[in-house]
Image (cartoon, rainbow, N blue to C red; front, side):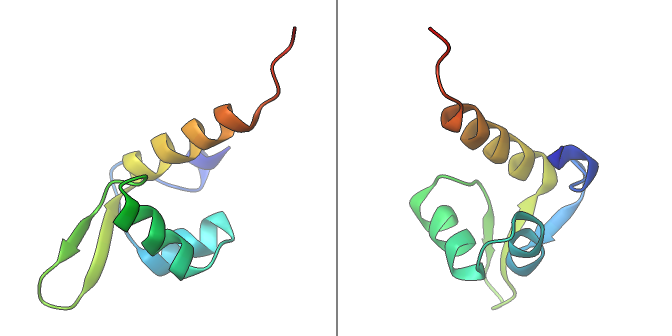
Length: 71
């Protein structure tokens, strides 16, 4: 489960998120720019930073959408 790898109270960089979710950093940046993933763009060129709880919520929401409906 994602919450065993991502700690809710920690701050993550784009690269760290990309590594954990096995996607490219460009994909993570697109999610951030599109507002799919909440984060803060740091003004001093540090880049995006994301709270772990937001990464967990984002990933769980995506996982729930991907599940087929049992009817």
